[in-house]
Length: 174
Image (cartoon, rainbow, N blue to C red; front, top):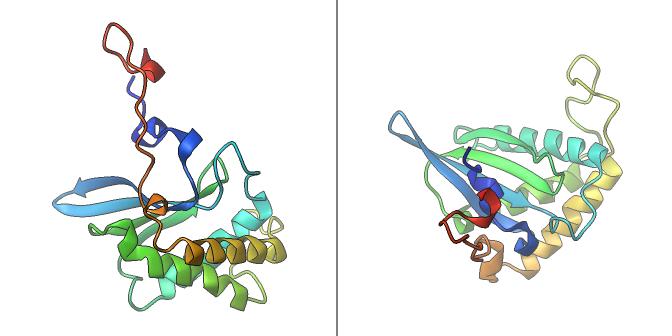
């Protein structure tokens, strides 16, 4: 069985940033999945689950109400490893082209006094939210993005070579 594309990136070298995870052609329409990474995998503690849930609600609400982007957004949701989010957009944009969208999305978190859709009738786990900690993570990521705006490492997955076995298999699937 082939290793899926996102597992083939060497996570030991990923830094927080905005990365192109994959592109698909669906019936002639390009769809791009972005890795919005807030934490260094296996180095920094992952994002608190309740804060992650609140960030998901707030940013999904922002993206789906943003007049310039709402028709392009297919999905916004957390990674299972709790180090970031996936954003799926219609089209074929480079990570730098969505920098302002991501920056503004995380800046928007500070404006909220309550998490949208965090009521029992709207959410499958409405008690699992923490707006205070969500604001902390959002502010931390905003500062990081601003400080690293001109750093190409936050827009490109690390280019590391995987070991290849004598029979030609990549080490991770040998």
